[in-house]
Length: 160
Image (cartoon, rainbow, N blue to C red):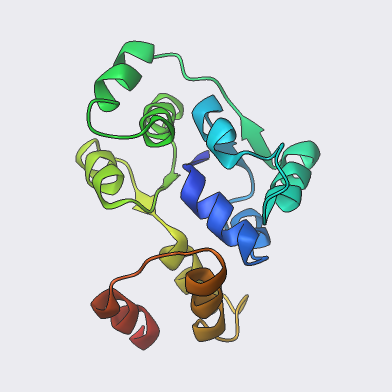
């Protein structure tokens, strides 16, 4: 079953050189056109080369969204990437939808989608032995990628 991602999980993991975790855990990732636009891979930004390589090799694939009226409805409360990612996940009956933003996660879950984000991906990587420690990756995320995490959530993740 397919996995659909929003911008944040791909971009943040690429910036800290952990994009391969997505391929290891999900195989192939589908992204809608709005997410491709938000990734800005044509600009020289941290992580852009890794993302371009993943698209070139085909394990990240751009897939158009069919239900544009639904996307417009979602855009009343969410950004373009989130709206298209949720719509695409529903269309493809995705097994996983990768989202980090709280509002997008709430909407996706309310529509019956199974959601995880960067922290869930890192926890799975630790459980599967793909990461020896979460702390240095989370430090990289906050320092290099500007990833924001609530202190109480960070404590829970590091305990797990």
